[in-house]
Amino acid sequence: MEIKILGSGCAKCKKLQGVAEEAVRELGLQANVIKEEDMMAIMSYGVIRTPAMVINEKVAVSGRVPSLEELKELISQHG
Image 1 (cartoon, rainbow, N blue to C red):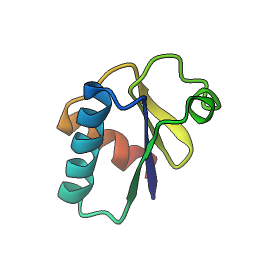
Image 2: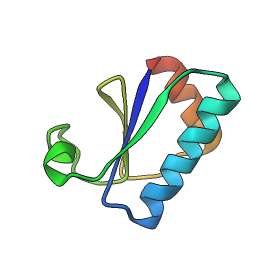
Image 3: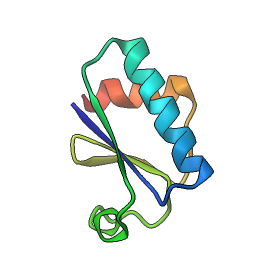
Image 4: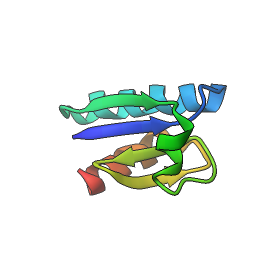
């Protein structure tokens, strides 16, 4: 499983990355959590607001930092 955190490196982007990594650990999954800061790459997903999270090349959330429980549910659904 590949999870990408899309964003410029702002505080919310870093928080989303941390929560995503924690969710992966709690779920006991093997996943690569990658930070993508290149604006052209971010735009290629059609994301208008960051932070955003892409799971296996599908945008799962955009423009906010979900709770740990919501992220665990999203990762389980998309994985």
